[in-house]
Image (cartoon, rainbow, N blue to C red; front, side, top):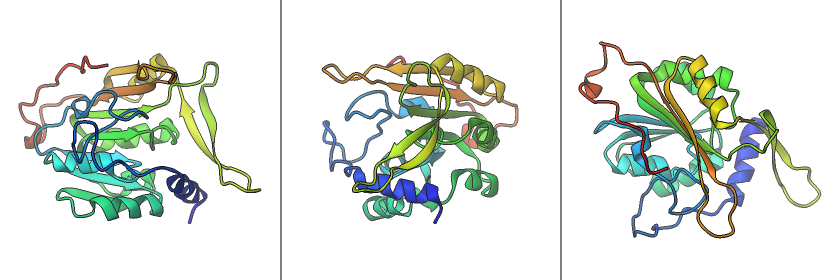
Length: 244
């Protein structure tokens, strides 16, 4: 097992399970932020009915399961066996959901499937060199397809590759994983440099109260062509959601 997989296995054991239902009584839902029942929803992915969507770093599978429940063909990829075991236990029987144990870059290089949208919620996009990841994602997106991801906003002055620490307890040193932090306008420019269009990066404020850290949500799409797959035919690019 790689050091990265060990790190995310350790992280997974420290995280609570997703609630059985959310505040609206729903058994599946999509959450972009670190706060329950907060922020925009699946509209940011701009998916057609029955679209195909990829979750990079799906964790315990709740977001991908929600998309499958909506009738999408959802693929969740994660490097952590512990994360995927939890996802399989809770969501494994969900029609339309496929869970894959793989390194994200290897999956994107080797699988060859295309998608209407690719997304990452505090996942792979945050923890992978964008110079390696963004071209591979773009190659897997259908014309007019959406890339969307969320992560914590950067600490002022701490940009580019940073270190995240996952505690192990006792006398053991914490595990270290790399992450990539940029301000919203820097993300927009970086995506444009890699051939994406209609880039938008916005910080969603935290819920009211004493919570201070919001969530950075980034959207972009690939260029349209006259050879769009039939599943996307006639599907206009809708304006970005005004919900954040």
